Length: 242
Ligand code: CTP
Ligand code: MG
Image 1 (cartoon, rainbow, N blue to C red):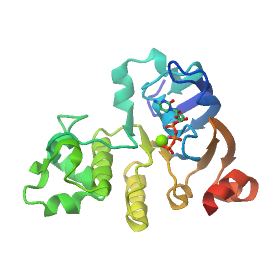
Image 2: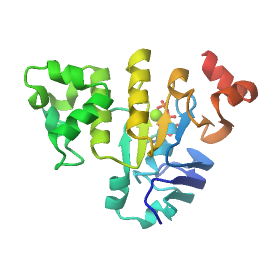
Image 3: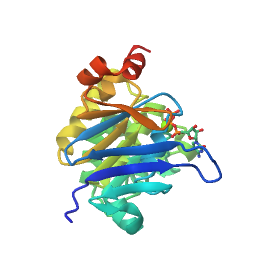
Image 4: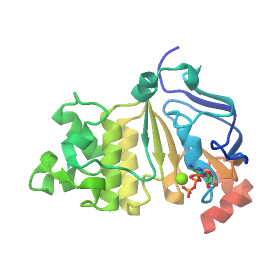
């Protein structure tokens, strides 16, 4: 199998350990290299839980999550982390330098690769403006950078690992609409062959996705492009109007 970052969920259901009610029920979709698949749905719908199954933060109760045609449960952790990078909903920075944070997944990255990732993530300017540049200290928990800066540094950290699959969990929410658009344009140009799965609340973040999955109460209730869903999905219309 070629390791290109092909993702498939096949009839996946999932419940948190100890809980009875399923959080995800019968989820099926594919995301191909070069595609962006967006997931939208109200709070608690199961968006974060769905993403968590690919890097195996949890395993599906039934059905299969496949990466390049192989169930993730049959892959080594390292094979998954080499191919999949997730930017979590609450992005975390370690206390230490910006450089230390960026190299976390790939210690051997060159400075040029770090700056390249920062440029795509729209974070190069603010790092350059800091007195110590890449050597600037991040406080414990990243409390000395803004929420939007933290998001962009975490996106840069994911870019440094050059994954085949990006998982963005609401990663653009703290960015203004213009920065969000610039970042995603740069990302698209830089990672044209990557598979991108993006959880987003804002319509502008997801409208250009190749496929949008509308998640409600752990189920995919509708799917299609933005234009298709505006015509066909009352759930999507409600989200768009809210
Ligand atoms: N849940 C749980 N245990 C966890 C995480 C989540 O029982 N460790 C439950 C939540 O209470 C919720 C459901 O799983 O009922 C789905 O949660 P989540 O996937 O986090 O929902 P999101 O769609 O990501 O919600 P949000 O938009 O608020 O991020
Ligand atoms: Mg979430």
